[in-house]
Image (cartoon, rainbow, N blue to C red):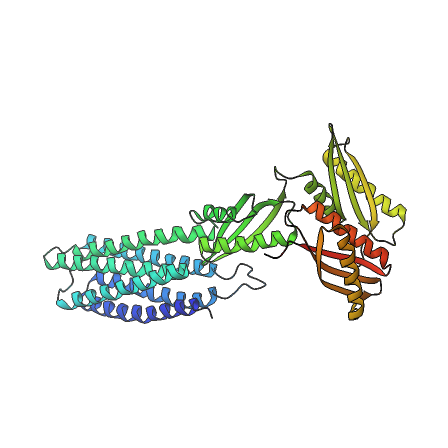
Length: 459
């Protein structure tokens, strides 16, 4: 269960009650003593109440998952709400400035000074300081712009209350203009803090990449095994989520499942680097400098949807000699099969040059055989005895074991394991095992295929 939406809504709800209570207290005291600075601060807190209600509503919407109409989720509702609150603050700041200037020009009577407004303001500072810290911590944890806006409002309330205390103190010392100047200070602080929040919000709405996010994402992707390079990384923020569009280079010789594994690894790496991240990974196949001729030919065949094996490559002076076994449907007419082989050879010449010599051996594609049944134990023992006898003829292959025989409509399929000297080369092992397999098929014509597995002796 995701607890982030609950945390955000709980913090926002607590802030509503705190804002409303302190705004009412400051407004009542401000009216009672006739302090424009205290009334201005109360109005500022009243805007905070409106802002917090909006925040509480918005975070319930912004955390909803993406849907058919909002493919990137609902995170930008927070940015829109932040802009609306900023607009309210500037309207309030403008009204305070106009009223303050009017009182300074007309010489309005100073407020009545007593201990009550100072007590209310000290309590307000303590409450707002606590709320600002709690909201700021939660905003960083959840990457919420709406909560960040709320935290900024309460931080400005602390500064505003301090300015009002200074203004009332000046008034008490006989400076009649102290209260109006304090109100102007409140308006200026509101404007400055609103400008700071507005800049961040507008940058998000304009899809400005967060500072350093592109570099971190590119570095994380570049560090993934199999990624040759990164062509482009684009980052945008929607609510707390980094949406990343990356184009990365991968070797063209990699199969699709290997590329898919690279994508998943890149997603994890980017999430670790940036936190909440949604990665769109586009893999661009590229030719590596160390790509072999055989790998290049296999890529050409794969791009043509052809099955090839036993690719041999030789250099004859300045000329390249290539031999390929091409598998096609066994029921295909020779004319069609030859056309496929001709197209493959032409593609190879286009890649390597017209002077390359290509010979293609056409053979029937092994069909997918139906499920078979295990042969009776007597038949298995007969095949095993024959394999041991044929292996004993050359002495290089021994310990025939794990023999399995299956009956299919196409014929018998034989699987067996054997052992060879650990120092023997793969070529020698293959030659000796092939000799045993050929001898077995000559002795038992019903055998369709023989599959061997050579192992070194047990330690």
